[in-house]
Amino acid sequence: ASVPQYTSRMATSVAAAAATRGGVRTGQTVRARAGGGGEARAVRLQVSIVNITRSTYVPRHRRRAEVNLVMCGALTADADTPPPQISQPEVPKWHYRHLIDQGRVFQETFPVRFDEVGPDQRTTMNTVATMVQECACNHAQGLWGIGKAMPPGMSAENLGWVCARMHIMVDRYPRWGEQVKVKTWFEAQGRVAARRDWELTSVGNGGGEPTSVGVATSQWVAFNIEKRKMARIPASVTEDFKAQALPDSPVMGPEYTVVKLPDVRDVEGCSDPFSHSVRRSDMDMNGHVNNAVYVEWVLEAVPADMWDSHRLKELELEFRSECNYGDVVDALSCPEAAVAAAAEGGGDSLAIAESDNRVLLVHMLLKRGVGKREAEVVRARTAWEPRGG
Image (cartoon, rainbow, N blue to C red):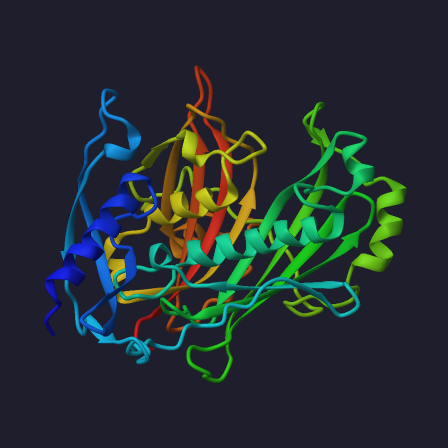
């Protein structure tokens, strides 16, 4: 459609004046009305600011702006005619955070973001680990206040929580754009530890049926931040847990047991060390490497052909020590069968049952020492299933 010259000039003047005063930015739509010859017109013009001349020697009201008017679609319409409606896809309705089950369970829904998927447009184990970590931290804030990761009774005694173990089982990796509902709850285990569990469900995309993403469990211990050693949970905190925890609901089932993971340093058949230097971006607000970063490091040592032929289904982590900025960490990986052969008759047993179509790998993260044996940071085990199986 054509635009009358007087209308175009008028709209240009309006856009230039607004741009000069900082009222319009590139890509913004300007609506202007012009009358002439007894005909009222409504004009919608998209503004692209090319240059704004700013001189200290020219008064503000005389500054000039050069604009480009991009004519798109129907630029003119009768004043009484509403602008055409542009068809838009349905925008997903993201869910948010809730305390449910009488405040004993925390639920949060996460959209799968573009930077959380791989070349197959599916999430990764690291995405799942990040989701469960974020959900747990937000649960803490829901109970104890914004920016509070600890109960007041623990903060008063300079105590914190340290994750000792984590086990994640994945049924299905969601795709980009899906929504994942994560539920989490915890239960005290005596006066020094607590168990936290998660259940993950894809709530579908476009109204699809919910499907299981996976489950996870973890064990946490109370830790004296100043003395850098384990501590007892204050009695006031365990008393509060009676109203906050969800008792007798282990997500892995009542028969689930924790098994020590093996040391693979002296096992033949391990991969060459894959080295990582701790970066500032690896650090969390507690001053050490974030647990989700350890997941990345462990999996980087997995051979490329394993990624091509198999999909990661389970990950167990046993946290041994912390890492700080500047540390250098080596990641090792080897088949579990090699460990079993080396430790035949030994005491290390398996937490993941061997099966015909699964491949089991064991891993370690070792922090390089100065003049002494390297320090263990993480022991891990992963279970892989053939793709398409």
